[in-house]
Length: 316
Image 1 (cartoon, rainbow, N blue to C red):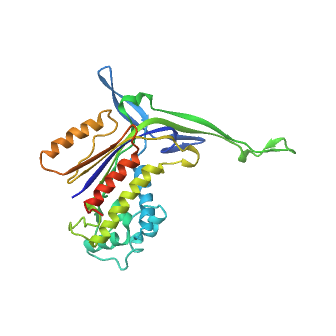
Image 2 (cartoon, rainbow, N blue to C red; image 1 turned 180 degrees about the horizontal axis):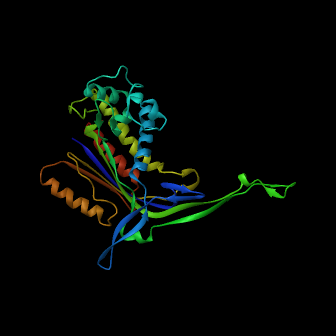
Image 3 (cartoon, helix red, strand yellow; image 1 turned 90 degrees about the vertical axis):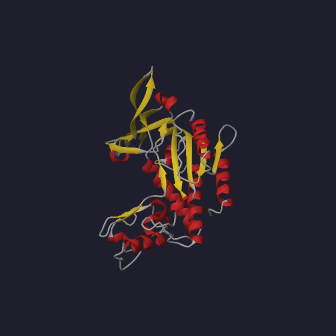
């Protein structure tokens, strides 16, 4: 068994990665209630955040691209970045017709037809209902605890101007606009987990749906998609005009035989706490891999080291 867990810290200045609503000419950044300790007491503050849904959507878009590059199957909806999955008969009939009556056959048909639904899971909400849990998990990106009070979201004024009409001395009102976009600035931390042993395996019978070679290819593209997402910073909204200034500052990767999640990067001692927890697991004879990127070591070096380790172990 192989379970990968990654803790990421990244700095984002003047970002609009996760917007939640527009009221008139004002677009708001996502904010969440957050517990911090101040003077020995707990208090709640509201801080900018990036939802797990936003990060998961970006990961699956990268998964589409990596899968297609490797010649693996991806359904038409997922190719367009519309991750409806096989939610009902209308979407399932695009993959298999006639639709089987057996839940095991439905799951098998969906998994064979689309890598994204294999790795990202789906819920077929018809009769019989079929549910496949996602092989990957992602947390919200939240400000690091020690600097959470410095995380802020602030509206920025923008204006669009039209040329003045010489005959009327006025510009076209519809072409002119003043609008506000809330931007966030924070040192964020989030967790990404990937259960490599769930790829290509039935959630109903726990038996392989695909042959061993196909499973290995899908594991490889699922890791490459994570590598690409983090190294390119291609996640979140409004990248065309609000690409965040900053980047990954620290990263930790663990690979364990059974599920193990790194300590959240929102804590300053998350690396040390993760190491102590792993040392306890070693006492039970579990094989463990850990790699860290901080200071002079870049994130890509740690990610590649983890991929090389998994390759040596025959995971793909």
